[in-house]
Image (cartoon, rainbow, N blue to C red; front, side, top):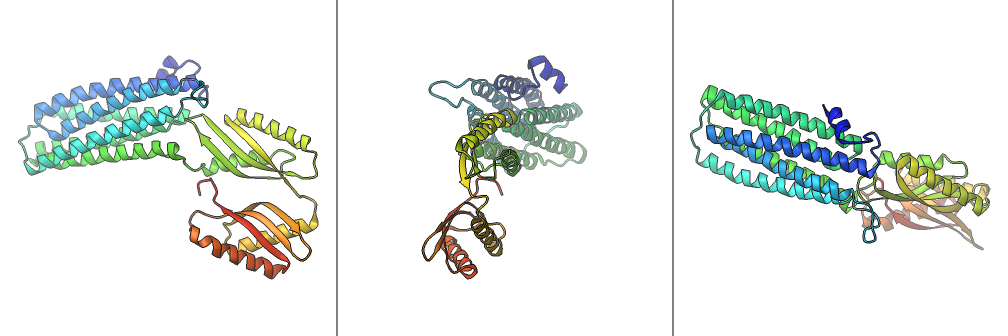
Length: 391
């Protein structure tokens, strides 16, 4: 069913890196969400009023909020697909995250309202009535929501959309919430237990949790999330695979919306190779990286020694010292400056984020001491920094 809808609605559906194709996917998800949730809202509200069940009506208004969310998602997908212009040279992709955050706010608001109503129902219970048809319709509702969850999950993975994946998680939460509502009706019909308020409370908590999770998922790329470790390694290894590149470091990726990213990386090149030769290699990597990763990559060249034996020995000695202090420590931009009586070892030290700023001086002193024990002529001049990669 999912593939049928995709092929029907999305021309060139396999080209998921095309912004226009992504927009069509987003619009399809929004339309399906609007229609399904409005149907579920009408059915559940009718049942809730008929059997006087707050948990059923709570579930109905949850579906109404989902319909509103789908409308916002639809509009957001349409706006996010707009091309770059003079005022927005990086495009409008981040509108997708903003629209998802608005959705999260609506979901949280509905959850809080249902929470208050459910608490009132617990303190002042009302009589319920049981109808088999109500349970049947709610079971069908669970089936619809389960399909919607799988539908959005499949689309979200296909186009790498955090919004669709969040919508999928919201639908799966609705599956649990409606299942709890069914339990409430069955408990009353079969056992005479009126646990409607308690179940309504659980439903409201599920709605609140879904809203908070959506907000968290959409705020991270807006604030600036770390680079996924697998992507970090994939890009770094790809750049290093080219002949003439000795190593890489300081990969940074800036996200301007799904499939709209820019990145920069420092590539180490032999210092005895003509700069024009290295520059030609770097240009080729940037072009081929865009075709492979769909990321605009800017490469900064760092010339490094590859044949000076004294330099290589000092670099190896430093690597051994850092491994002795903490195997997680890394360094780059290593330079050796010879003086009359001393040798300055200049480098950037990359430390894990669990190191506190107050520990930096102590770390510098310890490394400097150990290096001097290895070679009394050496002094360390280091800049401490963190990696942009998720650990």
